[in-house]
Image 1 (spheres, rainbow, N blue to C red):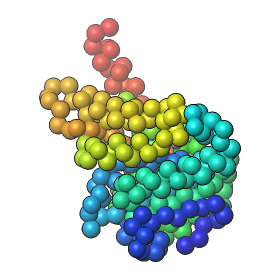
Image 2 (image 1 turned 90 degrees about the vertical axis):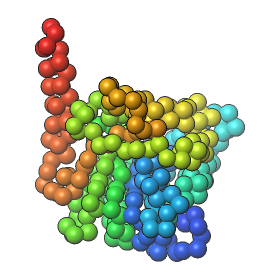
Image 3 (image 1 turned 120 degrees about the vertical axis):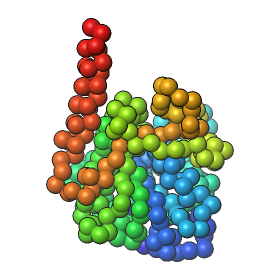
Length: 283
Ligand SMILES: [Zn+2]
């Protein structure tokens, strides 16, 4: 298995299978922009497959981790040092989470944000040709990070290019840079992320370069999952120990002609109407 960038990294945590065989086992796949995005957005898939012989989670990180903030022991690190640290941290997470395979494609952000990038498209097409996941976790279309949206666009393009019978049954847009609590309840896809809280904490915790750099992603991610679980339903006790919200993007893959902009706008319109209708009852 070979990818377009010379720094691309392939890691099979078990070490027994070749990358191709590990990828072929994949039932749950996440395609994310940066190191640590997978562990924040797709813990549901990781937990679904954890310790199971019949299910396997694999992760794809598209960018190279360049330009990361650095502080503390990392303050004097060069950009190349930092990319190496982030690559190693992603491998640690893959080991802790028992992933089938971790792929880090090492593309610079600038290349990823080029909508026509043939190298990014080629890599994603090769990955999807080599596995048949039932569930795919992507960035959600209302995320506020340009690189996340760019990776979503490349991912959807690659999924839409698959023959209809090879497309995954479920494609979900997940929370990182902007949560999905604002969706109307009927539009929310609930992901129960309460299993193995010790593993969940470790998965975000291994990204020390980010956390020591001054961003408590570990606490914030756990806090968001708890808040989602408690604020999910007003009139009953908590049913879940942790919840992540997702948007069901499957219609965008089933119908390659469906406009991503129109599809997303409809969720926003329903949110707007929900607020306006409630206010109209009292004002
Ligand atoms: Zn990210």
